[in-house]
Amino acid sequence: MLLAIDLASVYWTRKAHRAARVTSLNNSFVGDDFPRHLPLEQPLGPAVLTVEDTVHYKLSGKDSNAEWASLYPPGGGFVHLGPLDRPFAISMYHQMHCLENLKRAVLYPSLSESHIQHLHHCINYVREMILCTPDLTLEPESTRLREAYHIRGIDGLGVSHTCKDWSTVYSAAESNY
Image 1 (tube, rainbow, N blue to C red):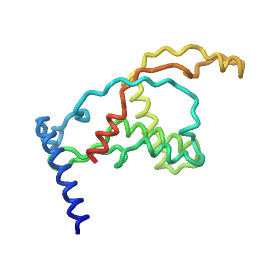
Image 2 (tube, helix red, strand yellow):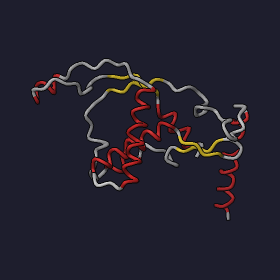
Image 3 (cartoon, rainbow, N blue to C red):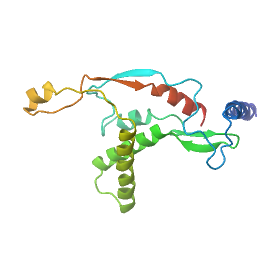
Image 4 (tube, rainbow, N blue to C red):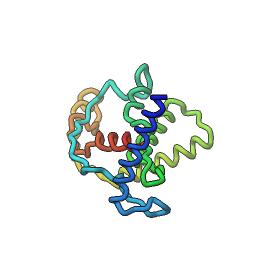
C-alpha cells in the first residue's frame, strides 16, 4: 500500500512539474501547437569529443548490446510533454535507433522486405541529419592508414570535435518519460 502511495506521489509530482514547465511555453500540445525542440531548462553546453578507436560499442560481442543500450534513457528517447502527456521522439535518439538498425543489417544481412524498407528509411534519415548539422572540423590524412596499409585516406582518429553536451538531453528525456 505504501509503495502504491509512493509511486502515485512520484507520478503526480512529475506530472505537476511537467505541466508547470509546459504552461510557460505557451503551447497547447494539440495538433501542430508544440515546440519544435525539446524544451530544456538551460541551453546545451559544448563538449569536446576526440575520435578514438575504442573497445566499446562493437558490432557484436559480450558487452555490445548493453553498451549500446546504455546510450538510451528509460523510454528509449521518447518523452511525454504537455498537459495530456503527448508522446514525442527526440531526433537524437531516432538517429541512434537508425544507426543501430544499420549495425544489425551488417550483422544479419538476410532481412525481410519490411526490414529493408525500414533500413532504407534509416539510411536516408541519417544522411539527412548529417546534412542538417554539418560538422566543419578538418580531418587530416591518416598516417596510420598510410603506414599500416599503404593507402591514403582519412580515419578521423585523434581529431577533436566541438559537440553539444548530449548528457543534458539524456537527463531531460529521463525526467520526461
